[in-house]
Amino acid sequence: MLFNSYAFILFFLPIAVIGYFAIARRSSLGATFFLCAMSCVFYIWWKASFILVLLASMTVNFILAQHLTKRVNEAASKRWLIVGLIFNIGLLGYFKYTNFFIANMNAVIGSDYSILNIALPLGISFFTFTQIAFLVDAWRGRVVELSAANYFLFVTYFPHLLAGPIIHHREMMPQFADASLKKINWDNIACGLILFTLGLTKKVLIADQIAPIANDGFANTAALGFVDAWMTILAYSLQLAFDFSGYTDMALGAALMMNIKLPQNFNAPYRATNIQDFWRRWHMTLSRFLRDYIYIPLGGNRLGEVRMCLLFLATFIIGGLWHGAAWTFVLWGFLHGAALVVLHLWRKLSLPLPNIVAIFITFIFVICCFAVFRAASLADAMHILSAAAGLKGVSLHVAMPAWSVLLAMLAALVLAFTPKTAFEIAQQITLNKRTALLVGALMLVSLVLVPGATEFIYFIF
Image (cartoon, rainbow, N blue to C red; front, side):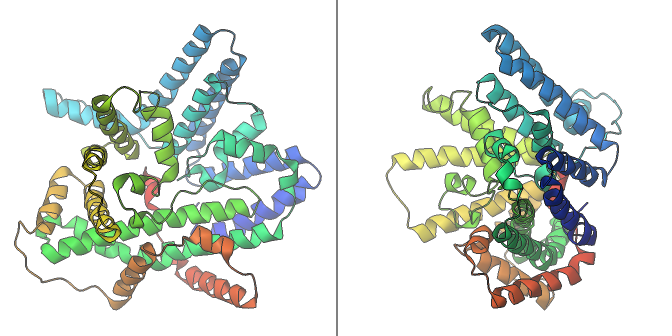
């Protein structure tokens, strides 16, 4: 079920919110079970068989977490953790990387193994990383609450299930266990509705309007000229930012209506002054996972500069592969890791750049990397980047898109560099008739465009 669909906006979400609070008046546990059931319905809406993978994953991880929290002895706990990591990485690897491995093995050794018919369960990358973090923290002795009902809801909670944010048990489980949060809070409902509306507006009025430029460009990378290449790169970078942050705003808004606060995932990332700053603003919960569960456990900056720089590369290559099984994602991750190495070396020179220059350089680097991220192959990535670099000539000819598309791109550019995020606006906005009319108008216009809306980009990851 899409957030940007009539089924979700007009039926599912109101039923979930009203039913949750109605049941919570009589039974806190009953309200939790109700949200679990609604979350399963939400997930089954896509494909019923996928729920079996999700349920199996949760069941195995919950059993493992119980063993880890008992902490009989350190050796036994470590064995259970290794079993858990093998299970989760194996599950993700089977569904996401089996065919990638087969295709590359065929290419390298000349074999002819058939590609398997494996359907990728929606949200598997998100719920797998969420549970890996839970197991590691259980092994570290940081899990203090292990209710089966709250764990089930922690993993399946529908606002974050399909495309994040990647949530952490310390910020979620106490909220699910807090009976005081199961009472209607009209301020939270109003703020959540505003944030949900802003996210929907981002998706249907900006991201979906820009999408045709990006789609056409990446479908014909070999034919792109200098200006066309930059238009394509810019269009996709803006589409991705508003599509993904729009989903996150809608997720945070839907959760807030039920008094649940999900973690922020975006903070004006295109205003970043360097690549480290970018990753503190873009997909913030993935950055947190990569830092806390890969980079730091493998040594972080404790084992010397060379090891640290190698870990930059390794961590971001893993981050790239998390997005999908393709060499374009590997290269994208490598480029970001390499940029962190360059940043580390640059800081040693003590030559700070003016903010506007630093923002411009970071922005150009990031969107060029997104060209690699979006490209169907490494060859396509090289086509579009070489055209953007002027290696195919510097013709100023460009196929002009419709005015509505250009206006959407212009609005996206302005908003991308605006300091305040939708999250901040929703929290700070004054609730009055004027606000209600504005939010209502945005919702109405967005609803008119909903039938032509597309799936969110991060659903494929």
